[in-house]
Length: 270
Ligand SMILES: C[S@@+](CC[C@H](N)C(=O)[O-])C[C@H]1O[C@@H](n2cnc3c(N)ncnc32)[C@H](O)[C@@H]1O
Image (cartoon, rainbow, N blue to C red; front, top):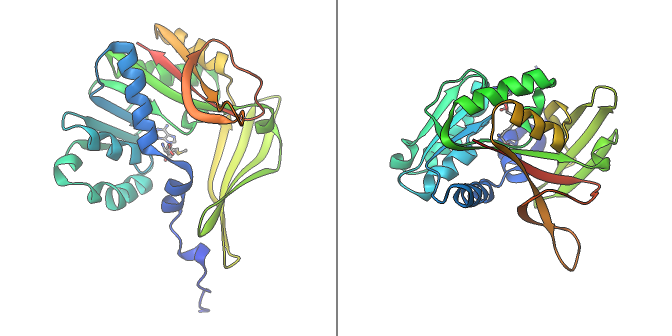
């Protein structure tokens, strides 16, 4: 058998690269607590991270306060096992005990009632019809406490509808590539891919792929209300006064400006 050439691409760990390029669990947790406190005037205690993958947000959640518990739900045992080995095993045992991983479907997994359910990085866009989306929101509603928030994120803008478009972010030892592969205006389905490129010229092609419906903010808000939420709020990013670029601070708004590529949060309030 021929020896496979050792390259950065075939020795790198795709979950580690994803974590470094895509996620910021500390920022997520701060945002979740800020919104929960301003809504209910008390801190949230139980978080359920839907589509949790490696459960990085669960791990961050329990770091904050000894009262906090986190439930991570994902269908795929592979990222759950990776998270257990590389993230959860590295936090103190007393904190680890307060993270509960559930291998299952977010629509049917049974967990104690949570103050917050968070579905991040657009994962719920796998639900492609209003009926499927509503069924998920109904399940989330059922698993929320009486004072509960379902926190969703979303992206859009006309740049996100272009085919064969790459956005490259440089890191010290690799490049993160977000590819918008194909968008179908009739179905609003989009195929997106993540690749990683390395200094030795090697490429980890299609490290992750997502087949999503590109929902709009009003559609998601309407379906949240149909599922029984009292309110469905949109949080839009503030702009830096000098550069005009987004500054990472999201506030509840009724109107936004036509940004070519935006990220926003949509929050269902129970
Ligand atoms: C885009 S990743 C999100 C990872 C992480 N939450 C983040 O914010 O980066 C999507 C995850 O959703 C999981 N998934 C897809 N469909 C699911 C379902 N119906 N129920 C539970 N997990 C699901 C996949 O296994 C995958 O780990």
